[in-house]
Amino acid sequence: MLPRRKNLVEEPPERCPLNECLSIIGGAWTPNIIWYLSEKPRRFSELKDDIPGISAKMLTARLKRLEADGVVERRVEPTSPPSVEYRLTALGGELKPAIDAIVSVGHRLKALNGEG
Image (cartoon, rainbow, N blue to C red; front, side, top):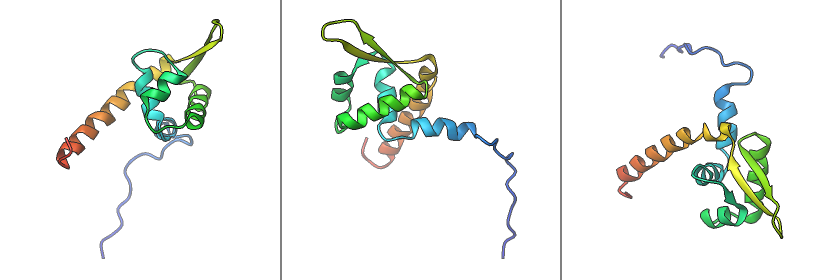
């Protein structure tokens, strides 16, 4: 029987930074929302069109969560009728390189599986 090896990585702090970040970008549709908002601000209907398959209810829930997490800013434009625009905050913009890295690996995985 092989001896059990100890983990040499430091014990994570109580609120592990990795878990904090993954709790934000790990939600269904969340990386897609960050991806589309990274180029320019988008209105709700534009985001809905950008992300096929997402329901209005789910998009609303994800945007509210991202806003509460400080990743997305919601701005009401004083038009008639009022329009709402969403944009990434500075913190949200810092997530873009992580999303880019995931997309890059995804392309390589697709190519490896003959889907590229």
